[in-house]
Every structure is written in structure tokens, then in C-alpha cells.
Amino acid sequence: VSLVWFEGHIYDDEPLPIDPGDRGLLLGDGIFETLLVVGHTALWRAEHLARLENAARKLVLRLNLEVVGQAIKELLELAHETHVLRVTLSRGAGVRGLAGQGIKPTILVSLDSFDPKMIFQPVKLITSSIRRSTSSVAARTKTLSYLDNVMAAREATAQHAEDALLLNTDGFAASSTISNLFLLKSDQLITPSLDQAILPGIMRRALLDEAASLGFAPVERPVEPAELLTADAVFLTNSLRFIRPVTAIDELPMRSRNLDSFINCLCKLAKQQCGTDLRLI
Amino acid sequence: VSLVWFEGHIYDDEPLPIDPGDRGLLLGDGIFETLLVVGHTALWRAEHLARLENAARKLVLRLNLEVVGQAIKELLELAHETHVLRVTLSRGAGVRGLAGQGIKPTILVSLDSFDPKMIFQPVKLITSSIRRSTSSVAARTKTLSYLDNVMAAREATAQHAEDALLLNTDGFAASSTISNLFLLKSDQLITPSLDQAILPGIMRRALLDEAASLGFAPVERPVEPAELLTADAVFLTNSLRFIRPVTAIDELPMRSRNLDSFINCLCKLAKQQCGTDLRLI
Image (cartoon, rainbow over the protein chains, first blue to last red):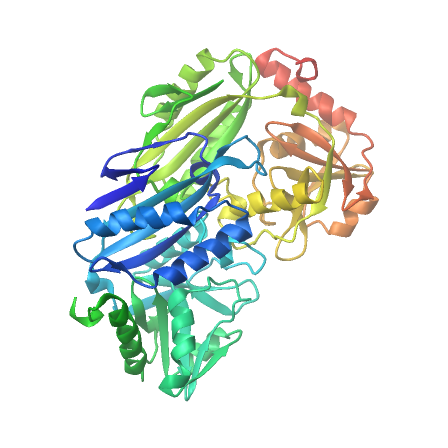
């Protein structure tokens, strides 16, 4: 299934009438969010919409949350399995010129099938040649200018890995192309801090908030790549796959000890929202 | 006028039937070129198509140059004033996932009005807080992931300047959001080298090739921002505005001595192609 809400209509696997001047299409001038949908519920919906709002403020994009909420509502009524819901907001079509403002932002909300087998899947990484720039707006926001992530993911595929680890321009470990990075080291849950050219992940925030209750001290700071080698566990988080143990980076094996309590914790939080255990879908 | 060639049809200021999964729209996964059109001629057309081809190779995008050529031909027949012609190529719609390949690339060629008054216009710059990353594919290719340039241009507008100077992640002067950067220093024509996170500009190449005949030694190397202060001239080049003297950076006045021979030279080259003197349109 692929349904798209666009300008008040729902399109069923059909082309959308997009303005040829749309700055999302021409310049990657916009933002997006992806949410997992289980049983008519979009998980961590409030947090995703809050992040969308923050990103819109950063890019000075007008965002009508009421319209987005209505679009999500209409699509969720049509949900019947595990889906990925994507909210896309572009600056719309406007005058030519980079600094030009769109007349009216474009909102596009899509509902696609999502294979739940992808959740919790272990992952092998390679280190990308592409770095995340600490001065880049695109590196710390979920924007339509995603090409560097696309190219890093292609490097991974070419080297028979599932995803790529990106360092930042200061040489610290930042994230993967689609996920935040975590490591466990004795009683510390460590993740790159928000100044490290990373996205402020929703699952990242959830785990940091729960760490203490699981007996771990949450630590946000720059992470040296070499630290990953000696960690008790290295793992990735995102809103579609939750936690993925990293089994290797550049063919060096990584440990994944003590991950169960974190997986259980996210499953409990998800079940409170949708009534379903993610391990059973 | 705004005409768009898309999938074999010409759309006159109408919405385009775009696949909702188009990776250009969703991920900035594509490339583009902009050419100045004067009297049915797209200037430096062969060079722009060669750069498009190089960029397609870098991104592993399939490019049907015959189709692009046919689209350009059809649009040029409809040209009747000074236009900007833009060729956009995205990876098309495909399977989900960053590394996914589009089933069929999307080609979109547009013809819009262009006000020739913008050519040769002097420009005031501010220095952007955003830097061009030397490891970024997007920073050295004309891609649909243009957001950092958009945000830098917005910084310029907010500070009452027309464009922004971007340094690269090594701290050297790289380019503006839309133009290559040059300086004159006695008998040297200096511009950041291609390893400085810049686009390989068509006008940049043309000027470097002509420098010797104008009595200047062409020099491509890293450029310290402080060098701009003592240059005989600082100027920008791109395919729509040709040469723009930089009159100030961050309100520090810049010189623009000895630019006439370079402007004359580009005008001569353009006239050979389109028969018109750019200074008279």
C-alpha cells in the first residue's frame, strides 16, 4: 500500500500534481519525519511533531500543524498493518533565487507498508568517507537535502554492509546515515552530544530519559571512533527499527552485551502507545 | 513564462504529475544545471551537459543525454527573450531505503524568464556561519540537496547582503552560495582549487582558460580569507550572472580593479555563441 495525502486529497499510488517550482523538489528546501505505525497508532507522534516544529522554526518554514494532524488522522484510519508514515514539508513554490520564500509550503503525508522484520535487526557498518559537518544545518536537521546520507549508504552497499558510520568534521563518531549511535561502557550509556552534527533522534531521547531507571548513567559527549572497539555494546537507534546491535564496523567485530534491558524498555514504551508488543509483529 | 518539459510533454505553468516516491522530492537525490538562454541559444551548452554527465557518474545516476537534448531543443524553440534553462535529473522513484535505486530517473527541463539586469551586478557579501565540507559530495556537485546554500543565502538576506561567502571546513574561502570566487593579485588570477569543496564552475573554467591571453597567470589553490582584503579585485562568477564584482565582505570594502578585460572576454565568448552582446540585452 502507498497512500499519499496531498492538498486535502488522498492519492492511491498515483502521481501528485506538484508545482514545478516546488523548492523541495528543486533545492531540497524542506524537512521530514518518519513514524512507525502499528495498529492505527503512529508511535511517538507528539515527539515527532515537536521535532518537525523545531526544524520548521530553524528553516523559517511555515507549518500548519492542524493540517498535518488532519492528514495523519485520515491516513491512520486507512492503516491496516505495520506502516511507515512520512510527513514532508517543503517551502513550496516561490520566486527564483535561493533566499526566495515559497508562497505556500507544500505538505505531503504518505503511508507505506513497512516490514516489521526490519525492527531489531543486527547491522554491519563500514566507515563512510563522507563526514557530517558541524556547521551544516542539513547535518543536524531531518531535511530534504539528504544526498550525503544517500551516498554514504551507497558506499555501505558497495562494501556489503547494511549501513555506514559517519564521523563528523572534527573526527568524532557521529551517527549512521539513518540512525543515532550509542555505546555501553560498564554502567554508562554513551551517545554523541547534539553539537556533534547529528539529528536529535526521538529514540535517542527516549533511551537517555530511561537510562537511569535501567541502572545506566546517560552520557552525551563527543565519541572517539576507537572507543567503539572496547565498548560492551555498540548499537543504533531510530524510529522505524528501534534498536539495532552493531555486529561489526569495517569488519572489526563489535560486542553487543547487555542490550536486552534497552530493547525491553523501548518495547514497553511502544506497547503503552499501541497495545502491541513490537517483538510479536 | 515558465515552461517545463516532463516525460515528453511541455507543461505551461501547470502542476507536474510527479511520482510521490521520487527521490529528488523526498531525499534531494539528484543533480541539476542552469544555463543562460539568449536568442534561442543556451550558452556553454556542451560544457553544462558534460558537467551533468560527470555529476551523474559520481552519483551513479542513469542519464539519457539524447532525451535531455531533445527536451532542450523543444524548449529553445519556444524561447523569445532572456531565459534561464534548468535541467533537473533525479534518481526517480524506487524502493524505500537510502541506498535504493530508482526504477527510472526523472528528467525535468524548465525554461523561465531571466532578467538580464542581474548580469554583472555588483554584490555585497557576508561570511556565512555555514561551511562547505571538503568530504561532502553535495558540496562539490550541483545537487538537489542545496539546503545549506539556501540557509546561507537567507543569512545574507537577513544581514542586508546579496549573497554569502562560504568558507570550507578547513577555514579557507570556498565560494558563494551560487558562484565561484576569484581574486586578482598583481598578475595572478587566483581561485580556490577543486579540492576546496566547490563546484567546478563553467565560467570558472572559461576564465582560467582565458587568463593567460589576458596577461594573467591562472592559479588554483586554497585561498585564505584574509587574502581577499588586499586583492586588487574580488569577484564572483556563475553561468547566469557571469562576473559580479564583490564590493564588500562583512561591510569591509573590497577593490574591483582591472575587471574590464575579464568581462570583455566573457562577453566576446558569449557573443560567439549567441550573436548578442550581453552588455546590450
